[in-house]
View (tube, rainbow, N blue to C red):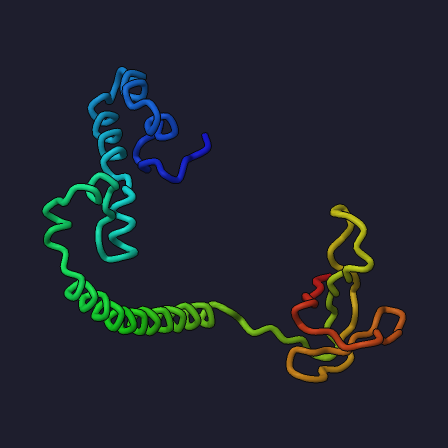
Amino acid sequence: MVRNPNTYPGNADGIYSDRMPIRTIGKSDRGMVQRVENTIKFHGSRKSASERANRIYGTEAIISAEIGEETQRVARYDAVKNQEERAFDLTVIKEKRDVAYTRILHHKGLMMRSHDRKVRARCFQVGDLVLKKVEVSKYVGKLDPGWEGPFKVVKAKKPGTYKLQDMEAKNLPRPLNIHNLKKFYA
């Protein structure tokens, strides 16, 4: 079943409930109370346009009927006070962004430490047998092997870079990075 992102997660028939809640409720014999609760929660939890406007602009949207006729909300509107509140909100939002940014950096640091704790450094010694990842130019299809070799490590040039030699003692033209190599187990 394909899930609609607007559905309530507990509602198994959420795809249809936004169009026909009565049909959704009428489908089940067991657990009808649960289905009614889920359907009501789903229909009550949808975000309206006024809520979106409130989050974006800091005020509720005014419908066209309120523009022509003065309502209490329109009558109490003070442009100067509103401008001051918006200016205050703009200064506060910079602080909120800074706090969010520091939280993101802290969380990234925690994730990096957790990742680095689990990662084992790989290195090969001179004389080890390794497999080399097949180059894209030689790749033909998905049934071709992804690795070729074995090759013998002749020299470790820089940390993580190795000069290789095939089994006929021919050196490969360029050194390879450790990300393109894996240990060969014979």
